[in-house]
Amino acid sequence: MSRPATRVLALLEILQDRGLVPADELARRLDVDARAVRRYITALRDMDIPVESVRGRYGGYRLARGVRLPPLMLADDEAVAVAVALATGKQHEQVGEPGPTDRALVKLNRVLPAPLRRRVTALIAATSATAGPLTPEPHLALTLAAAVHARHTVRIEHTRGAREVDPYGLVVHARRWYLVGHDHLRAAIRMYRLDRISDAAELPGTFTPPGGFDPVTHVLHTLTLGAWTHRTEVWLDTDLDTARDHLPATFGDLHACPDGGVLLVSGAESLPAMARILTGLPWPFTVRSPPALVTALAEHVTALTLAVARSRPGA
Image 1 (cartoon, one colour):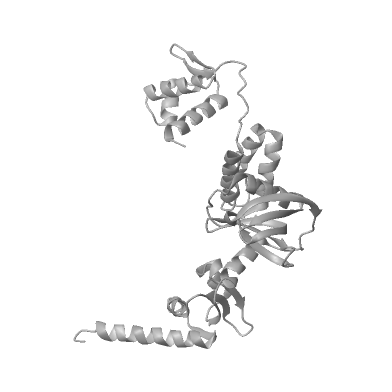
Image 2 (tube, one colour):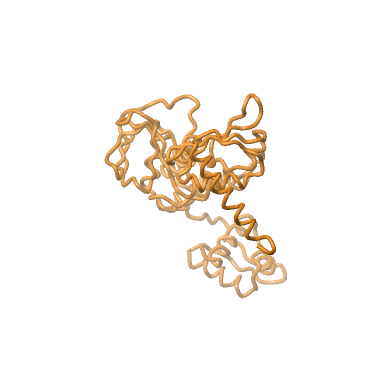
């Protein structure tokens, strides 16, 4: 949204919250001059929002008495954009007093038509986010969210063929949307990128999600281990809390060892790249598997030793 449009909406909000507001106060709150305030007032009137001008020492602008603004009407793609912002912003607000996302949701619920409100609320409730996402196709996202909320089986048209899935949740990670659920054909839990699903439809069948299942954990685990060529196990000379604070969740699974230290179970497409990452860790470590990672680590150490030797004066 352009900055002038944002200020027009801010002006409308000020006038709704207050009665008569002096022009100089509006200019100060919007950080503009008096001429810009008059332009924004004209923009509101062009949208058939009646704004009255009151002249004199105690004059200013106010909404016409008894005016009722028309309800906010959002197309599906606009509603999804709002829901995305709410679902992702909520992840980073502190627990406790209602934050800006809660207040925004209250305002949204006041003005959305009931059918769209239920669908948007279902989308927010069904979605977990670890990063700012790309907006998915609106109809697809709303259909899948409704199925998650109602616990209805869905039929999806995926690039690898049609599937019937019991949808457990939607997860947004690294700017991509994922559907997580039980694939009837594979008889296993799978995840599907929404940008690879062309259509979805709810089916009559219902399901009960497995107790304690966390779609976010499943996505992070799958992306960490399931997509890589090599599985690696490395013992770290640190404690579990320190390791979790230092390493991103997608780096691997961390397990406290009974005799001390932490076992990092991860995956790698390139063992030389994994060796370079390990040498950048702030703790001593021991490679437990695979043996090829030990070889890659030794080659990397040799290369570092040669680089040090070449860098010495007189070398």
